[in-house]
Length: 467
Image 1 (cartoon, rainbow, N blue to C red):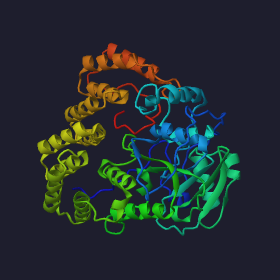
Image 2: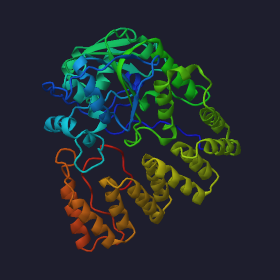
Image 3: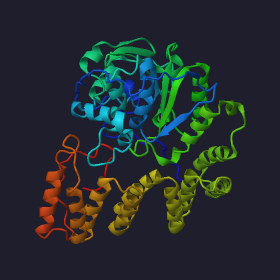
Image 4: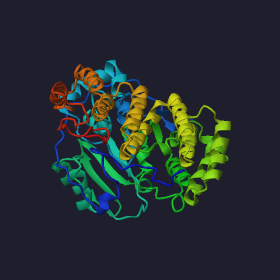
């Protein structure tokens, strides 16, 4: 197993590491989000509160926070607090032109919110909380900041500067903010806002909706020696349990499809789900496969490849249909330079959980950097087979086909892309780019030359490796 960071940095529109609120700024322009009239929830049936981590509850594991909107809406008539455990507040402004369409989708076809990897997405995940607050669903947003030092002193200037430059608040919202030593309050999207380390948040007397994003653990984790991952998880759950929250819903998002979080820690979703749905097990011994995972994480610091492989093989014996266990075995085989065996394990992981196909992008990049465009193309096509609705993969395939001097194949893919309904909000220049791509191919391009320059902004979901 490679000793590498588990958590990737947020990309493009997402907030930088929370520690930057105290140390750094960023270089994007501000934008002022508009407010809209609250949308009435589809159903006004009141949800029965439960005490989080004291009573069994349903955890809704989701790929990204936009998929949580239907669950949040069901609680909206009770005006709960949204308790957000995340390294990103998901407050990028939702385009005004999309608000009515999103509201209609929530009423008639919530599944549309789940797929943002299309040519015409309704919204991106980092707009989720913005949309919910602008609909008036919550009485308060309580943002649990993932700070290693919960006693760290917040700087109002640095906090507001970071939020403004990241386009998460407007100037009026920044002016409303006040900061004490370790917490901040403001009015954001006409909603009460408080931000602090989890243990420093004020008592939440109103019913709450809890959303945990996997990025919450990103700034908290340094390495397995100084900040072991499982104790971080258990500490967070214990802090939540001690609060005795009257909860209406619990949602959880992974962030892997957005490339915010590495696949290595996807197993954390299973851990959170276990304890939310069966809180009595918190005080019981840790399941064997989690104990093995913890040992493997620790041993990776000492290059114990053989021992780690033994642990992963034991995991597979106990859980032969676990995608994250297959992914562990893929990592181990790759570490042993067993390429074919590694790809076989990857294929098994992807068959069980297609999100693991995101790893093919890493393999594409590795092959490309090694001067193997043919192998890079093979990895891209594997990604496309697992994630067939993602047009950005098809675009990369077309670009790679040019490098491989496969002009006819590139032209076929570009034609398919031109038939898609590209969003004039999120991808306004894509039709023009595809037309120039077609012209380039018709004029004899596609014999190894570079493809036309794409002035389209980077894919808002994740960085791409091809130009």
